[in-house]
Image (tube, rainbow over all chains, first blue to last red; front, side, top):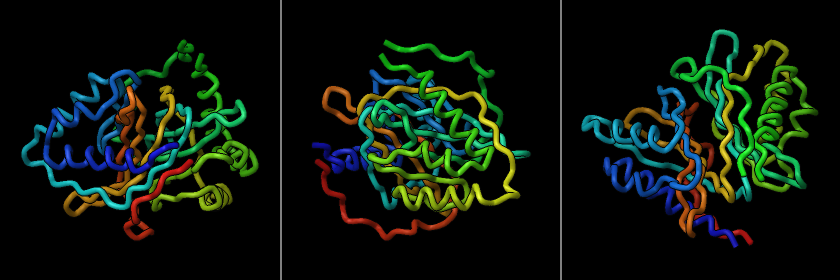
Length: 134
Length: 134
């Protein structure tokens, strides 16, 4: 049984930590054993726990940063999932996207796509194809 | 063994379907047995397979829509995951976010966060807490 309410409670904790500029609480909320990434508005995509937490330290350390409130959260269970972050060039515009894939009958299919304005070019050069993990 | 290359290949298929305005290919790529959602830039969050595919039909049916190219994709394995979509009010601004949670030692923790400008207010009123799924 998957308890979506439990995840919505953690989602609420995330916004409480954000609103209260509570770095220690924010640090507690991020995964340790899984790869992590973060796309803040107006930032390039940030990958890896150290870089993600450094980004939060910078954001939460800004005493003048505005209040934040979460509205209308909805939770969706994926089962085994992989997410891809990438940039999208659409003529003159550069966007940045999160794509979530789930496995159905052995086939990876899209469960979610979010695309929005990117702050600038990707920080990393185009990559060689990643290998597999075991 | 998780083959991230297989997912990056599906991610590439997604952008090919997008660039070629191929609705049938796009339809094939989206999950059937899992909940789906989509946050296009300049749109409210779209949830449910019928609404998501209707959004793609509209986008791919626009003959004047610009070309799209994917840059610098990176894939991240989650294990069992839940994603939350929600809006964020930051003083005068309204943002929309994707938050991905993974389970570590029985605790749901953040694996990814993307936030970007929202097109407008949430279409749905604030919800009663969702129940559990079995």
